[in-house]
Length: 530
Image (cartoon, rainbow, N blue to C red; front, side, top):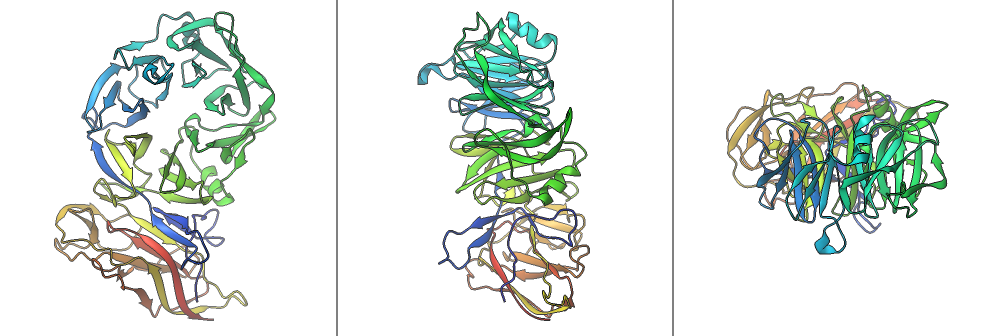
């Protein structure tokens, strides 16, 4: 019989409720009922080195941004432009060396009306890089900018109708002169004061500015007042909402919506309630209770960050908590969640994803590494994280006898997936410890093509393996692993089977992959009896 093997990550308060997890595998709806399956699991994208550590040190890439077809990145206190070959060039020096970067631009004059300015704020100051003159300027002389820094520090920058708009962690915002981020009028400011909490995030959505505060949100629009007379922005009547943001860096735009880690006002305070999507004005909480439980158990939410990207028909919102070392992903196409992780190249442990920031350039997806300053191309055509194995697994739902909840005898399990995905001959290039908490040999061998195998042998056939384990207590403890071949190159008729699997009352199956090959899981079948 077919078992409910595929799906999203919904392990939450207790595995006895739902043990299902999809780690480095995401669900894909196949489209029509005429297909063999209406749902499949697809391997998450890998990373390929594009630019080696921008400044040669082991520090995080603080931000990536693309303007007028050129990629820019910040590493330590330097702004770099990065050409299509991955070669960085220093363009300016910031006053800080840590913390995230907020970017915006006011357009390139070669494409029409524009100021040719890339603006950055870093939590201390603001900076303008002119893409035509290639000059880098720290904003210091503008009268209004003195006010920005006198009671707070510039946190985020956004653009609307020719103006840069900056928040500084207070209840007020400031607006630059038209098409010029070097000039800021002392009059072009206003308090966002329908509620007495501070602005944390600013985003341009549908040609309106959303000022998202700690517990509330206000929507403002351009009413055409010159900056020499006051602020060109005014609140949209009635557009004040009792939701806020738990981390200003969790906000990200994707498609016609934006996403963020949402708070809900309660009297003069509030609480984090999950991940929200905004398409019009009011938020919709898109994270299910299991994901919300995971979020609620976090040590902190303040440094969570998110980004959106689209690939192969899916639009993903990627949310990382660097303190608690996890990355969860919402697929807006299927409305399902999965998890992503990267192995440590030192301990072999499963961690948050390597990506610390994201941009789209050269018709490709790029991310910056949080550990070493590398920039990677991210694509489904890569099967390692720049040489590190991508350790993926699916924990299925519990198999039970729905009538009397007696033990179930499982004589055979067949996992249906694309096979024959083996590669050519292999050579070992590195050894990485086996992931903590999993049974197996002491080391994992990383081979020249990025594929992986357990054991101490330095040679082996190009025969990728899938590893099955199971739990007889609803996912609390696990058996040893038992491997089956995914098929050598072009062995497309290979079948993955495991026999004589014993009995249990709350049986949960888990299948894992470590080799650097294509991963498409279509379903699973069992021969079982109560």
